[in-house]
Length: 519
Image (cartoon, rainbow, N blue to C red; front, side, top):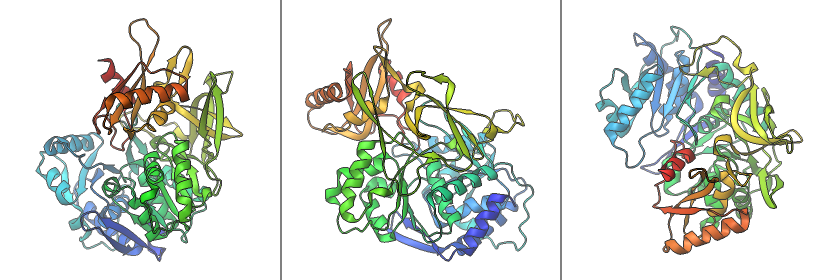
C-alpha cells in the first residue's frame, strides 16, 4: 500500500465525521460516516483486484458516496485514477462517449466506473475498456486481505487543459499528492474541527484537492454537484450556512455571483466560515472584494477571503496566504493606468518559486513564474521517463508575475499578453472591466490581441450578450475600457450566451477565440 492510500485509510477510519453528498435530482443530502465510505473503498478495491489485468482506473459522474469511495478504492488496489467530466449540455452522447473512452484508453485506463445515465451512455459505446457500475462495485464483498498486484508509481492522471494549448495529462505520484495536501493543511491550519463545503468538480485539480484535503484533515465534507450550483449559484450561501462550513473554495465566477446578487440572499449565517479560497484563474480583486463586503451582513469575516495560486502540474496548490490575512492588493501603474493585483501568499511547505532570471523584465521585476518542489508531477503522460527528480528542476509555468516581499502576484499568461503601442496588457484587466457593463454576461468576456498584416496589434473583445440593445452595450464596453484601461478596442463582438469556447473546468479558451476572430 502506497503512502497516500495508507494516509487516506488512517484518516477515514479514524474520523468520527461524515461525507454528506447532495443528490441533484431529489435535492436531498445523504450522509455516510467516513469509516463506512472507506469500507466501500475496500469493496471497490476487491472488485478491481479480481480483474486479470488492471491498468489505471477512470471515473465519470456526479459526486456520490460511491464515487468518492472509488478514488480511495483505486489507490487501495495499487492503481492510478483519472477523473473526467460528464457530457456538457448540447453534446452528442455517442460522440462524447467515444471521445471520453478514447481519452481514457490513451492514458492507460483499463476500467471505467460511472453511474446513472452516464454509465448507460458509456456502456453503449464500442470500446475495449471495461465499463462498470459504481454501485455494483461498492457492493462487492470486501477482502480481508487486500493485496495489490503492484503499486503504480502514479496516483492521479490529471488533465491540465487551461486557457491555452491542447489538453495534457500530468502524472502525479502518491508522494507528490500527499505532500501537496499536507502543505495545504499546514498552511491553512486545518483539522477535524473544521467543516468543508464544496461544489467544485472533482475532475478538476482544485475540486479533487479540496476533497482530499478534507479527508486527510478528518473533517466532515458537504459535497454538492457542480450542476446544482450552476442551476442556482446563490444556493452556495445556503449550503455554507446549513453545513456551518469553516472551509470552502471556488473560482471568480462563484464569488462574483454571490457579490452581485447578494440582495437575493437571505436567512443565512456565514459566521463560521474562516477560509474561502479563490483560485483556478487570476483573482478578480473587485469581484472578490464585492463578495466579502456583500456577505459581511451575514456574518462573513473579511479575513476569510483567501486568494491562492496553483496548477495541476504541482498537484494543485503552489502558494497560499496564512490564515486570516484576507484579500490584500498590490497596485501598479503602467502608462498612467493603475492595475490592482491580489497578493497570493508564499509557497506552501515543500514548494519553491522564483521569477525566471532569463525571462524577466529588469525594470519592474515582472517575468515568468517558475516552480519546483515535492508536489510536482513526475512528467506529462507520454513523455519519456528521464529518471531525474522533476521536483528539483525549475518548471516554467507560462504565468507572468512578480514578487512583493516574497509573496506572489500573477498578472496573466505569457501566451495571452496583448502588446499595444509597446504596452503589455493582460486579458483579465480588460475582461473584468468589460464584464461590469450592463448587457454583458458575467464570466463571458474574452480579450485578445490581433494583428492585421504588418499593422500593430489590435485589441479585440468578444462578449456573451444578455441585454436588449446590442449597439448600446457595444458602445458602453468601448467607453468603459477606454476610461478605465486606457486602451481603445478595435472591435467588440457580441454573441449569444454559451458561444465562447471553454475547457471542461469552465476556463475560457482565449487562443481559440483569437483564431475564430481572425478567421
